[in-house]
Length: 423
Ligand SMILES: [Zn+2]
Image 1 (cartoon, helix red, strand yellow):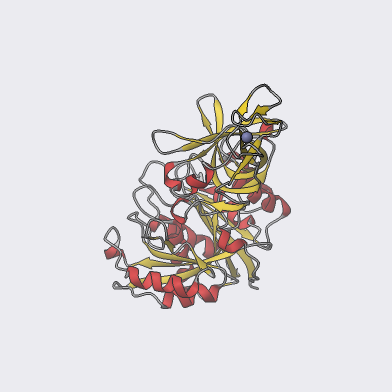
Image 2: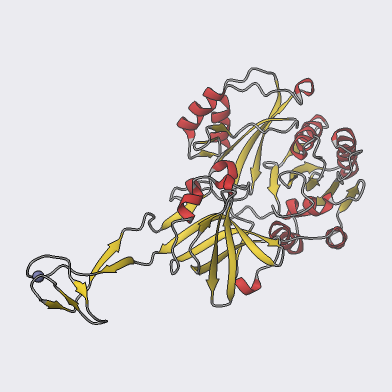
């Protein structure tokens, strides 16, 4: 009798090439050739973007399959990874997990742990064994962490889709032949139901990667139908091996957790409510830094040069402004720095300057005589009221984000935060 089986795969890529999504896409075709089918969308799951071991995007793949012969599936997984993983490259440590049935509460919790924090191979293996999964490992087998987490990923609250088109092998490493004009046109017709297609600020096309990997392009969107519709609008001048629509946790902010400054740790991504303590300043390298405080402590916040126009918002903050910051915590020498991904400006302090008033009688500028008062030199009128000039703030309360070119895969774009429904 056919059962639902989950296959998780991670860490098959290297800095040189390869790609876990390609291994997943090939495996889907092999499973179908064996007479089985997928039981739902394959998953592309992004994990903690601050993981020091990650190759590029820290992505794992999970496939829900209906099958009866588990040994046959295991054999297919083994062969595809042997064939396509970059096994002879230092740092490529593939792992695969096969689970019969649905993931337990323990595996689902493990996903949240791995998307927000760091885990170890030992921790993943212990949970994998507790749950009677089958484990496949190559080299150090670090991929079991992502493979298990991808199976446990909770996409019930929020998810997006990505259509990934893969290239024929003879094209790997060559320039991608996708007409940029067709990408801009597709964006015009489908944004914000698709997102991250282009970077308006830099003029770059964002759907094609710059690495020698087998990915031709990826289109992100809120439904399977919109990414497919968008794909068909593109003009592509090379043969496509195949395309696959993945269900994903990209653009969901799954990596972020609310926290007080005193509890912040290295390599996690946080949301902190606080007050601007120091005036933000540009450094020589074009980065902007300021200090944020809450009732538990203070932390340096950074908007680095690649965040472009986002920095011009940050530099307009003033001490006393109430904000919520979103970003990754990095250790810089002794202290922590928060690399900003997004900021919610909640309230702005009023800025004013005080100067001598004009004389109420003759309109000449008065002069200060002591702490309380002013005198008009011309008509000797006295006055105790100052002239207060309010300075217009250049930013308004609201949410601001880094441009698409600087955004993390997991960060939810503002275009998705607006009030439209998606399934
Ligand atoms: Zn006067």
